View: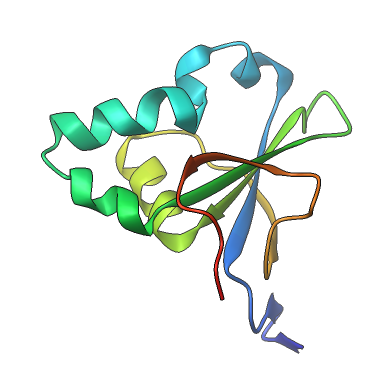
Length: 105
């Protein structure tokens, strides 16, 4: 169901990273989020973060990150670039959990 241009039950924002962003290790949540949470004295937030990673299909969308609202909030706090290209209720089966907790209903 679509409400005001958004999927009503969307739990994940789909964030695209281009080829140049993928080449920088710190642009991967699995590399940079945990140190950020520790350094900012917020390790308990890990229990609410869910980030899945999938392959993109173009140079501008080389990697797709499926981030729940908590993960997206932390990513923005970290000052990371955010290019949202969509929303989904859950990540596709082909996406792999890369950081945080698995999806649950």
